[in-house]
Image (cartoon, rainbow, N blue to C red; front, side, top):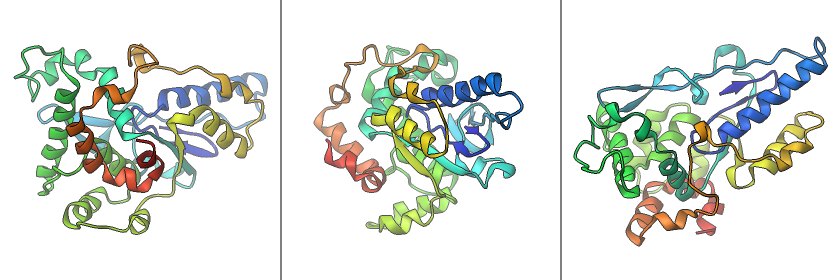
Amino acid sequence: MIATDKFNFIHLPKTGGTFTQKIISDYYQNRRKSLLGLIKQKLKIEYCYKYNNTTRMLNFNSIWGQHGGINQIPEKFKKNKNVTIIRNPFDWYASLYGFKWWETNPALTNNLSFKNIKTYPSISFIEMFDFYQQAVIEYGKTIDLDLSTIGYYTFHFIHFYFSNPNEMFKVLVSESTYDKNDLKEHMHPVKFLTQENLNSDLYLFLKGEGYKDIDYILNSNKILPHNRGRAKESDQWKEFYNNELFDIVLEKEELIFNLFPLYAKNI
């Protein structure tokens, strides 16, 4: 995450956070060069979940790196407003696959559920999907809940934005229906930009916060973390799904589709 003098940017993986962090960091760096002493010094804090090497599970209490949820904001920045990015769940998984995390961490992932895949580290999209889904299930075992109905994206979403993630998991697995407005009451206040319109959304947000001379954001190019991502911009998420997997994502990411109906309308 990045904490500035005005807001905290929460970097949910695979949503355009690398681009956003670069834009924000460069702005403060450039302003500090030209107006040294006239603005508050940039405050940059990098936090991330740390993985348990045995279960490959997320531990949101022990953190390092650039990703971290609102619950992990340091005390002195908790009064800031929060901003983050949301992405179409189908496209999110396609981006996750394009990043191919497992190729850079073969020793770890090969000891877990990838070990029976003869072609590893070359794996299919559905094999990746199943791997991350199993990670959610394993986490559920640590809190005595069956999280098999919870998608990996929803799993992250709840940990990043809800005040008591484990209690929210209980609600989702125990209630066949829920009121999304009731759920919002358990979320931290946060403004969502959309990945699909990130340049304009980020521009409008920063402009609303009083940032000047930022028109360049509207035409800034996409940034791939570690230069890893889908082979070409024209790759569409629909190419990765058969009908069965499509329906599975609709079911497991129901929370996201309910909170952000624009994605349900555009599939």
